[in-house]
Length: 121
Image (tube, rainbow, N blue to C red; front, side, top):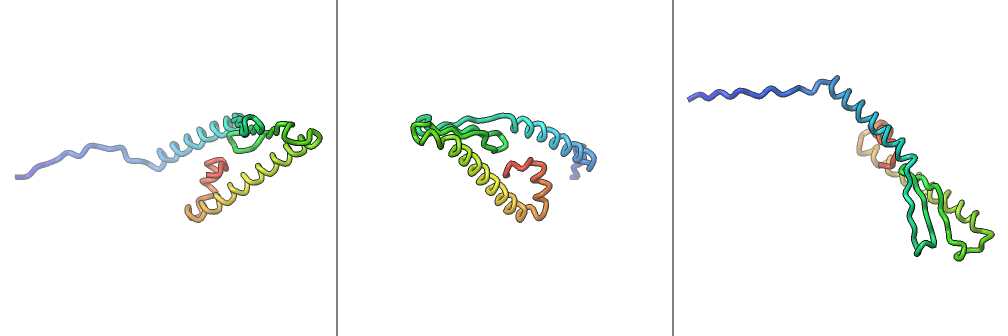
């Protein structure tokens, strides 16, 4: 006994269709990246003794240290040094992650990194 099955027609993924989807995704990622650059998160620790404001691009905008913890004459300089040190640490950790990912992606890392907007992923 012979059975015949009709195969359902499936849309084939064409290179043009895939490229359009990739382009849409890149455009959306660009919009989200622009929004993240402006959005901030504010975190406090030590019962409000230290406050950090950081962007969605992982860039520290400010660090405030309660003046009761330090000499008021040194407060602004200390806060500026903390911002610089934290941003440098973030950049170095992102570079390390990008280097490791390049080994995994076999050279596609640069393109992927561009698509991800250098978010350290």
